[in-house]
Image (cartoon, rainbow, N blue to C red; front, side):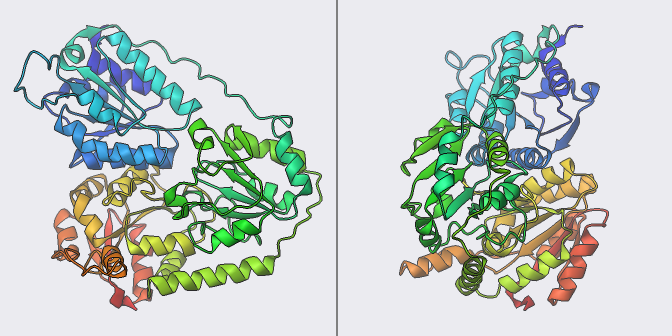
Length: 524
């Protein structure tokens, strides 16, 4: 039956598997809220559109489904642009639906008016379009979901004029059958197999896009060593003897790469935030495998470039090498010695954090999904905390947004009801999105929030010192975080030692709401 378009959109989203929407209603997008309950969708009310966007991001990373957010015209859209930028850099499926003004050229001074809202959003997402009719709204939503399935995941923005949201419209069409993606065959990877047949020291570099549960078997069959990006942590599990770990950004990894006689990089941009140097360091042939053609045209100048999804590539490689006899020039002892040296370097660079990280890891259930923020604690943990499985540690890698972890962790916990989810955040990062703590309280999420308070922007202070700049503007007056958390209705505890911290973390997973676990460097 006919309904206002705003209501029909919610029904369309429900038909495409959307169960949760994050957002904030306002007078300009209230028509989008008309059909949410009727469609059977849960709405999570954020305290700020930035929080809503990060929640949608965290939900998408945890669930494997697109995260959806509703925002208003103008400031609502501007506020969610930071999460959209984060989702773009980290390849996250996010759909942002906003209202927009019906006319902006002939009328000025309207509420929430922007010069060009569609163009503004386009700077931080895959695409941003205006739906001037019900059919165009349905077509754009269908396109977004199709591309989430078949292309590199990236956020999309659709805006609908207010008058269109209010106007009656026919129901949206039934969902289309998603397109079938082409799968790699042995013939497609023949050039890679030829190089592997003569390689003695093959090295695989696995990024966040290397999605497959076959990598451990593949590496074992080939006798290959591996490095992972931070986003690729856990791709081969733990205990693989030739795994150098998530230490591609270590300066010394360039020497490891240079010692390989074949390098295969899968699902990684090899970007600045992956390497923290200009060049990968390879002297042998480089093979790049990625779903995104723009990644294959980078300055690393791969000898072989394969545009295909990583899962398909891994399966074809597994089949082709299943009967192979591993012949490797790598030694488990050299890998272990290098890992030990790099761990010591990490500890020396940011002293005192490694023991706390180790103790925290022991207290976490193995299947905990962790959301971390831009804080020294997370920088250390990303290198020394071994992950048993992939996609269980989420961090604002590319855009590098402070305040990401708390709302993203809330979104993840909503997607993982009954499973352990935790947040690691620094004192300054918590200032950015602290009000979202109220959402976790309202939802009754048993969410441990590990707050690392070193009383300053310590990473920036250290950087200024290295650059021979007198540290300036790196200290802000912090509140009593425990009292503040309790004011929101959360639990709070300030452990005096590592044993108390471990007990507090374990108790937080069974609490009736979030628990702030307040840590300082004095805990040692």
